[in-house]
Length: 197
Image (cartoon, rainbow, N blue to C red; front, side, top):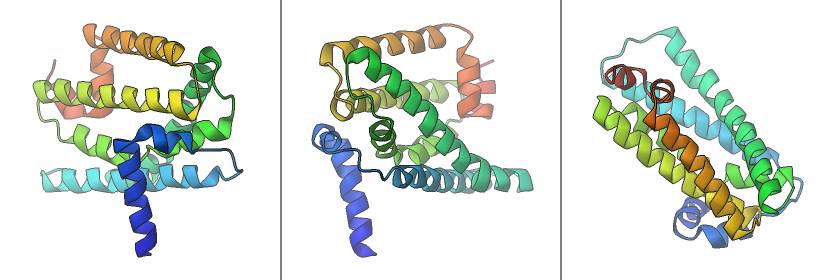
């Protein structure tokens, strides 16, 4: 058990400190279930953390909140894994990288330790300014991770990967510069988003 915990923390350290070394080691070996299980577990952990934070800050204890934390959030995490996998396959096709679904899912599954962090950080936004700051920082870091996966895991051409990430960044800038940001903020934190109205 202690070895597994050490390995998990070593994995997180490698993704954060040396993503190139970590992502270049990912290969297709027929074991995609581990990535899906990681996404589910991190989703469950994130849902429980957010539920705990909400209860500590005075939110009411409801069956809907519990159901959302232990069922909807983990299932949503697996759904996000597959949607992002599809997007990564498209990026890989454009950038001349690997065209392997398993590698895409495993690369994304490797960064899903960020999912509970993102959920918790978004839940900590308490007004419009904090929502802007947190949302921008999270989106920039997610783009950075996506860049590393597309470049090192999917082995896309660097120039093409940078161009695609720049296009996604421009799309996000457009969202932030228009009223569509409200929908984006509501997805992350209802109460902080409504403070922006």
